[in-house]
Image 1 (cartoon, rainbow, N blue to C red):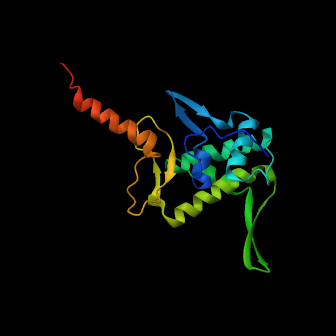
Image 2: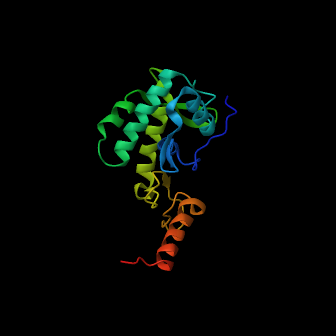
Image 3: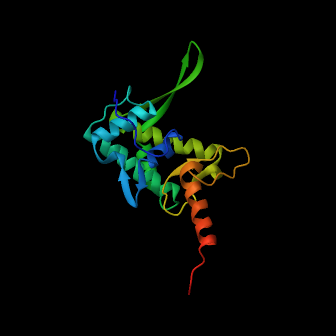
Length: 179
């Protein structure tokens, strides 16, 4: 279990989007939490997967493959790569004392975090695909699941990107260009 804090500006999204948000912009530079196994450990801890999966180089590789496949699928570019990730696991139906259940199983558990994120994306698509959003700020690459009542959320964070956009619009109105 990791004790390092998660440095990302947006955490707690559904697992698929949370994995996508392991890349973000800071001061015009792309940051990547998954650049090392220690960053993977931070992500696993932040998502509660650290009890089930080990942060090692192979798990890191498989998780970044899944992230790239998710990115392509969310952008509508390719879905085949996500299918390859989904081929690495399956859901097994079970019956427990509490009732029916499901267990995720993997041929190689090092695919687990990426596979669970890919599965999360399928669940989002079956629930409300129109609520999967990219932040409206032009310099932001973060994704979120819009849970607002009327479905009009535009920013990953109103405090960050929303305020920056408002400040930019205010500055543009206050300081007209001299041509």
